[in-house]
Image (cartoon, rainbow, N blue to C red; front, side, top):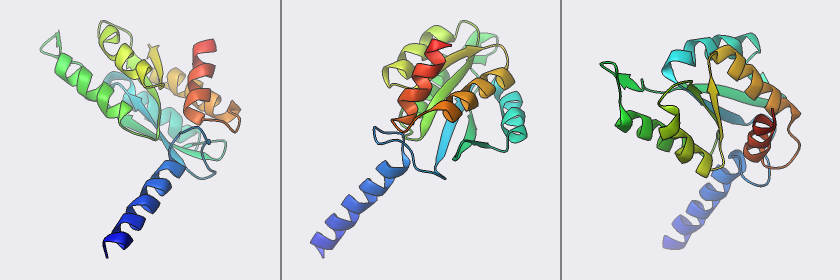
Amino acid sequence: MARCVGVALVLLALGVGAIGCGEEGVSSGATVRVYVAAPLCAEAQRELAKQGAKASEVEVRVECLDRAESGGRLDLAAIGADARRTTEDSAAIAYVEARGPANRFSRTIVEESGIAWIAAGSGATAMQRVLDAVSEAGSGSLRNEVREALEAS
């Protein structure tokens, strides 16, 4: 029985890795996520819906982040939690932050994990950039290719 459980756990881990954004690339029909700051999220969602929620053969989803400000002040705990939530998601390919003072707190956390980090004034423009990067990606690691494409633009 213990051996069956061990084998099942290994197979589950392999299955999770297959849909993630690791070195082998992402399979057709897989779902990836873009984490978007609260002020930009509705705009990003509308842009994604206009594009059919797909780029190439990959389904793209937007995850809205918590507000980075509370009472006119930065909420460092919320910023850190949002950035860590993104880095813990194997399907995360990008983090879109509104331009402003929160950038310096989220950027290093997100970039250290190899996820593209974008400071934007428009959720729609940022989402279009991400979708273009996904569409142009080759067969390598989607996360890496999206990050490299967005850094180059």
